[in-house]
Amino acid sequence: MFASPLRWNDVWLMLQGAGVTLSLTFWAVLGGTLLGLILGVVRPSSRWWVSAMIGFVLDIFRSVPLLIQLVLVNSFNSIVGLRLPVFTVACVALALYTAAYCAEVVRSGVLAVPLTTRRAARSLGMSWWQDITSIVLPMGMRVMLPTWIGLTLGVMKDTALVLWIGVAELLKTSQSIITRTQEPLLVLAIAGLIYFVISYPIARAGMRLEKKWNTQ
Image 1: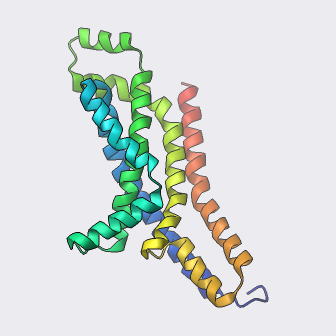
Image 2: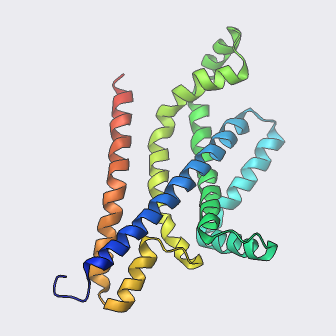
C-alpha cells in the first residue's frame, strides 16, 4: 500500500481500534452526562455545605490529570480484586472524569435561567421537579449544548490515554502498526484522518441543532 510496508489489513485493524474509541466515548459520555446532570441540578439547589462538598469532589477530578486517574482506577481494580476488564475500568474512569466537567456545564445552564422565571413557575404551583424538567432544563439546554458538544469531542480525543492501561483503541493499534512498519508519519496521518471523520459529524450536528434553536 502506497509503496510501503503498510497493508490494507493494517487499516482495517485501525478501524477496529476506532470502533473501540467510539464505544469508549459512548459509554463515558453517557455515564458522565447522567451523573453530571444529577450533580449539576442538585448542586445549585443544595445547602451551601452540600454544594461546597460536591464542588470539592468535582475539583479533584478536574484537577488531577486523566492519565493518573486511569492508572489509579486500574490499580484499585487490581488491589480490591474486582477483576473488571480493562475496557470497563477505562469507561468508569472516563465517565467520572466527564461527569466532573458535565456537572459544571449543567450548573451553568441552570444558573442561566432567570430567577424570576423560576419563581413564577413555583408561584403557579409547580413542584421543584416540574420546575426543573419543564422550565429550567429546556431553557438551559441552549447554554449547555455547545459546551457539551465540545466536551464530547474532548472525551473522544482523551480516550487515546487508555492505551496506558492496555485498551486497544485507535492510537494503541496505530502504535503497534508503527512498530512493525516503521512508518510513523503515514500511520499517524491515517489515524488523524479517522479521528476527524468520526468527530466531524458530531460537531456539525451540534452546530445545526444550535443554529436551529437560535432561529426559533
